[in-house]
Length: 229
Image (cartoon, rainbow, N blue to C red):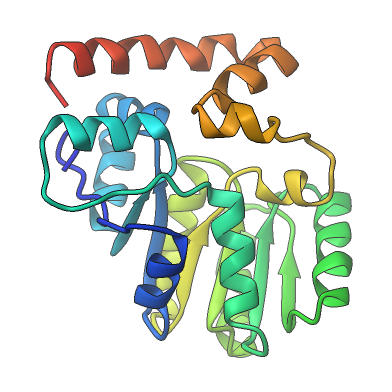
């Protein structure tokens, strides 16, 4: 548990996928930034806490769990990798895509369809509160068993919670900017950077405007050093 947030003790990506097979609920990535965001935003903290499945998407979470000397082995699982692996593991099942800009979503749909993924509906991430109920009804009527939501936190968690109330027999996954990475709009860090947990630094170098967000990592590091996680 990290500051009140339970994290699934998954040894690797395959083990997590096997565990999630035929399960319904909300699947949420936990990283250092999100932990601090939960401290700052009680609404997000409640939504994250209520999510059925939380996994470690960040080496900082793995290190914190190791610091607690938990008996469970925990692996860092990158959100975009898990999302793609989940889609292929559930090949043939109805999938609904929500989020991102219209052009990004269209390219994601085309690329996934070409891979044989059964996409039964799509919706970009720019819709009003009035339109939300209609979109959730579309998801319900589509019969989707897997819904990925790329709207960023806390928007995607709020949407997932509301959709889950109307269509509970489904696995919802918050995927942040995964669509952008998937179509090549945003470049991932080289594999060596990923292995050492430096993806955050790579993103900062590529997108200097993210520096304010990275300040949360300093607070997380302080909590880690002082054993307040």
